[in-house]
Length: 608
Image (cartoon, rainbow, N blue to C red):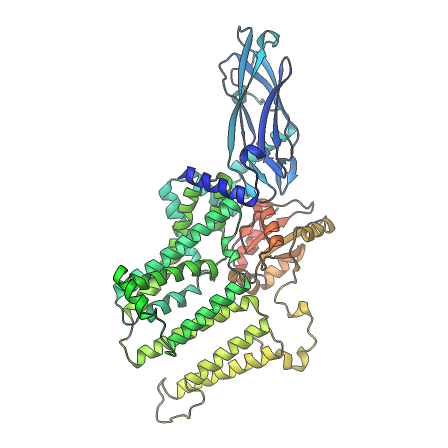
């Protein structure tokens, strides 16, 4: 399997113009003088090597030739990491500990890992270099056979700093970002531990806004099947969730290996519009305006070949597309798996983790779908009522989706129209029958009138330019006509940007200040929840006063958005990165996914 993924990666490298590993890194060895060996790594264009991933070892410690010391050039700072952007120029001072003479070949094991600034990380690599030396000219050495293990053989400040940093990370695991900790779960755990951990993460993610829109989808699918039993409802739900899991897994592997967010690619306006219209069409069929079915000739052929599987195929397609279009938000467990895949190239183990995560997210959906089949009313008036309810829910999903690309006031108008539609259909305009005080009479009408009034306020407010559904009539109130943008906002105003150049300029202009950068997209429901719930919290707003607030808008998913996401290792929104007063990124403080206000406050308090 590893070779298959390596082959796929090679195809992709050729297709998008990335250098092959042998082109990106060209190690070579030569003699500098009689007792000094030089190792160089010629780097391709826009290629760099991580300092803490570069290791030099004696591949044959028993040959009587010791590595007395190893020195190299100093690394540079790059996105909070120490890297070499040109050859590290390694120098190895040799000595002999045994009675050896004549020409002898020494072997040097060189291990390293690097990335391309264009957005690709190569898997860790190692090679053995050899060179002949005249041992008669070597000075005597009293070092042990393996100085790497005995005494500090690396003398540069760069590697000492790297070693100190590694020890600090080991001693203070809380300094590792949440996503890196989750990536370590995959790297260090057994297969079953990984599966169970990510299954648990998935169950927790099932409670997030990214999964909620799938509930009416799976429910309406089961209802549209008619009077099916619990067993068939269960298996259709399983098919939906498995297809969803396959989509998440494929999208995750692609993002981890190639840095391409497949889900974000499906957030283009025309795809969102098309899928939104599909939900409207499905809703109309729920209202019995027409019946959706394959032409009889084709249906007969499919039935002949696959029996009852034709319905299953449609459910599978809907599950696959729902994962890509309806729920594209990123959370810490998902980002952790993507980081692991990107750093190690182990798409198989990373894919297993992603699949387990997706199944955990889908368990509540299976429960919802199965219960829809279990409590399905028998054909009749109740069945029509249930179908109409799910039809309204599908229209709600459609409006929720299309709102990603519409102005907020237009979205309010659409919600208003839906509310008026619902109100009229439950009898808001029908005369009251005073003899009936059950929910089907006066109470039902009262509910309808309330929904009607609210729907009309949303419609009128949207026409007047209102954007807050809780205060739809603000534009018509005298004391609300001159509200500033900052006063209208529920949280402190972020400076919105879309490119690396804009962020670099802000970092330069605000030296001496701490900076919070929020990666956001209109199509990310968890991002909107962060804005509505967390950033609008009074305590959170106060805590954020000490930061310069910047928001990177990834909605367009264009080249600029991909470039800035790639530079900062962002697989998708929501994500937040922090910079200290010197403009240095605090990578251990990264946030991925939605955070409750108190959890966000605790995180801010832990940033040093």
